[in-house]
Image (cartoon, rainbow over all chains, first blue to last red; front, side):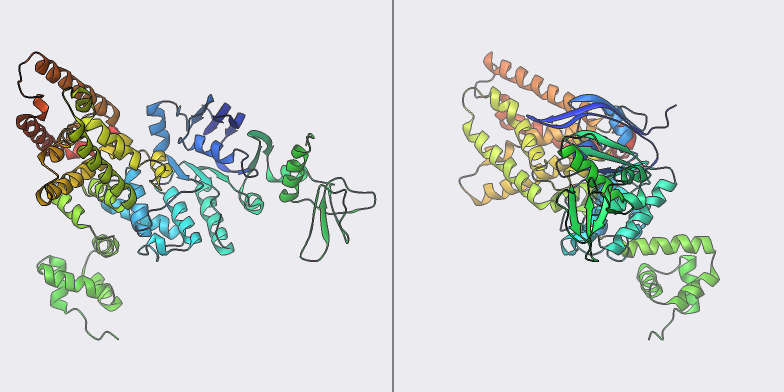
Length: 288
Length: 277
């Protein structure tokens, strides 16, 4: 019996002449896995395959032990899936409660009382317990995002796919979100989240996958990703043009990522440095 | 500050189920804001029963109110969950308006365009409105399309539910239009009846089988009816046009729609079973 809840083998996806995914191979088990990559790298396409809303042009997937290419397999997966699309879209004239309740019916929670209790639970998890009666059109962008996260947590899904869940969340909401996700992972769920927030990945994920140009360019732990930039991050008082990338920090120092000059003051690398080193190396046609 | 509290006798009556509906509602409304009375109530009864009752009260007060359409559907025997899905169709305003408008347009255009060879229009009669409805609830219009696709609820079943309410709305609109405007007549109204009949039969079949299979059976069934009817006409059995366009044909479609909806309602328990999806 396999320990992997998500198996992606040789998956390619074309949108017309554009190749969005170019042979992805991944095996993912329970826990939180972060998917990083620049815009247009193929993260959302990959997540849509895993959320069963898109079929691959080539290759195959196996999710929660089922083949999503079959009707029965998709149904089994969808019954145990929680999914937040990148742009979920909301019925703005629904209240938050009504919207999550509507999704709960689509998730086959037919008993009214049980469903309402579940809707209250997930709205409470994302801190919207008191905002259930507000119209979605009247909610802020961050609150709407939390409504989206709430519907993805309905019925304790075993596979949770979240596409940029923290976009628009304030720092307090992001911390709360981390608490909720780690709670789901603690009870054995497989969580995949795509994000541009490297600090979310560093704080949450046991594993990180970097997708660039439709290909997996890195697959390891956040510490391993940070390690890609070990010995390649330095600070100086002036901008060094030889650096791959550099920026002025809040303390007024200039932080550089690249090949350090002799005598540079090296500093510990972060996951963000590793990511920048990797994306920069790929853009420059080098092997990271 | 609230000085009034539920009298001891009323609490006993409430717990014993002897208070009438008005008095029970009054007590429940007071309990939501009075901790002292809740404690008093708790002291009288079994804690588990009270907890269950209290949660039920909270749910009644907190849950979104039923819309008039949901209330009507529930009275007709539709399950509350299905009623909510059907009622939500009207809340998806843009998609709903587009689909009703498309169904009306298809009906009016088709009823006037049909000529001596109605076979194409006969095939299209129920299918084009359904395609228009499906398109109106597609990814370009329906904001929650992606979430809906990833949910286990049978999408064909959802389409059938939406089509029922859309076709019902379009029929009502056309009927009012036919009464109010001379330019509209019974032909435009009755053109939608085959579509409604097929959807109703499909809904009935969906109490026995998955949505795709039910849709295939109704679709093939309709094609057979069209072939047999047009063949019947070609052989000269009917002197004045195709049987489906005659009042008897339209009446048969309406009757089929009503009968199928009634029997589907009688089997609503099976319709709501997730295992059939």
